[in-house]
Length: 348
Ligand code: CP3
Image (cartoon, rainbow, N blue to C red; front, top):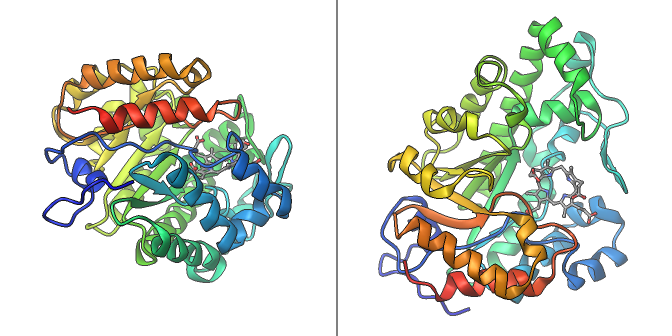
């Protein structure tokens, strides 16, 4: 882990996000900390569940650092979750075997009006403390990433009460009581903006805004019901902090994401990265986009696919290597090692 820092003292990942020429393509992975790592499972076995890990700054920092120690990525994303800020609005949040569960979802005007935001530095102080601990322990060339959920995706959890396939309750509220929908999205946008600013204050050097479910909307509905509040967040982020926008299965929204002018856009693996570079035309940096499912193959296959992906980018400025979505739990760590090593030894 002795990658050089450039003469400007700036980190590789930050330079790539600024679309500067770099000596090699930086790499980090969404969900790089998690159940596929035995050292994560060991910490989790001692902790009070997933939320117990996240709310304990020492444990969150330890788990954040695990993949950096093992693989040497260029970015460390804080171990936390996009749903925790919903607690700062007064919502109850649990994680069980089936994933996140919000036992009292918001469905009515009165529910939305009752949401009261508590300052992130108060309600989410453990996030700031974990960032501080990671920052101190991180190798000097590694970039510390903070993150939050975009208003639309947070609203989907707040309304559905968990992960949904068809978003029926969300659709009903969004279409039938649009004024209440807009009030909810405004509250979520303000909270998200405050949470991102708080993380930047606490040492996050770049930020990721996750809009996992935005791709379930048509382009017209995205513009009407989601984009204005994502835009509010993008505009509110401190100007000196790079922001990467992620949306799943959202090729039809790619042009809209470019129009929001974030620092970078995360490209889902179903979109061809070279074409995304052509379409972006140097307006933003692009992150991605190996298929996380391909990491269930073999280290040799992962190395081949990583090289092919880098070749397809052909040294264009502003590439941050990543997956198209998060690392899957049954992934063999050797496949993650093959991805990172291939990136670290390749020259653009
Ligand atoms: O990427 C990282 O390593 C940083 C940590 C991180 C987690 N969640 C940890 C986590 C980040 C950035 C997230 C973001 C997140 N959380 C998103 C957006 C990104 C995406 O995946 O689309 C979403 C939609 C969530 C909500 C969420 N959290 C779900 C649906 C689940 C259950 C599914 C699952 O993978 O278990 C979680 C739990 C969760 N968040 C885990 C981790 C490591 C699993 C916890 C465990 O059981 O140990």
